[in-house]
Length: 110
Image (cartoon, rainbow, N blue to C red; front, side):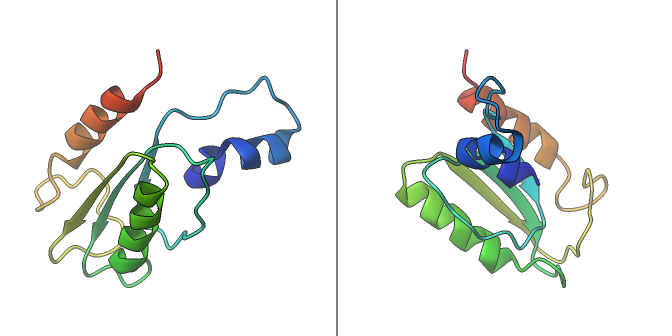
């Protein structure tokens, strides 16, 4: 859902309204979403390499294609983590939210 609403074309298709601004940045965790468009927002991803639902390779590949379109991306894969590590407290992902905030601040439109 975050990726869909971070795409200006899909947002317009869903709402029929041009006055709703596209998200400046998409922060995604553990998803198998793979569609890519030049209308996508800059995207930050974090995922565990032991996620049995969302393969980290699928997410990395999506960011590769976004990068090829010139869309800013940042990718983090965390060793040994399964699906749903949340804030990552007391895990190897601890601090991911701070990284995501830095990415957001770098890419937010004024």
